[in-house]
Image (cartoon, rainbow, N blue to C red):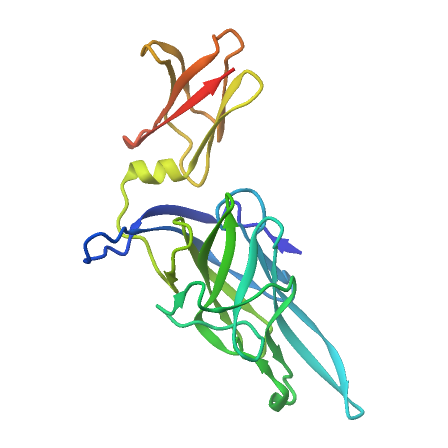
Length: 280
């Protein structure tokens, strides 16, 4: 059974890693804190990660147990497996020279120079509790190690990380947080965090505004359900004003003229986000 993170995440983006060298742009880190941490075990044997909150699973980490025969002896095993989603999400995970997932340390660079595995099922750890001499993998009994990801976002390549603990016997894994760089083809250090962000940037990251079927839809993610949605035309005339009472607010626009409109969300904490839409 896969555990959804939909109601367990708090995400934010910000300009991160201020660079002293002139002419070098700050990287934009989109970070998600899994709060509380999610433990994967025999009861719930996998966890899905949606890196950009796009509603599509980008990557899954799963646990598997079974038996294997070696020299007429049956051994129990526990395996930690990674499952990228190369079609619509993560298309590669960093691996070492032995062909198993790398367990990166804090600040290790994640970029094109790494070796990337593109298999849809990959090995992070293979543990034989009764005979540890046969163990395989870098993710055995580790704390605060990082998977390195490569994935496509709107047709461009991005790099990211996810932080896990894995038990020495391979029976549990704990997801703590993850992040990616929103700037295409930009290296991200493992564990890179955003710097302080403004409440407006938080709202922009957690708000989706789009037009559909003669209506404007405003969706709020990982934030309080409050505030006001205001729609104005290019002349600054107010077309609609609606109090936010649900995660999705729909404004009917069937009687409005085709053209450009500005949709503003203002919340009780004073944060504000405006998006320009063209309505046909």
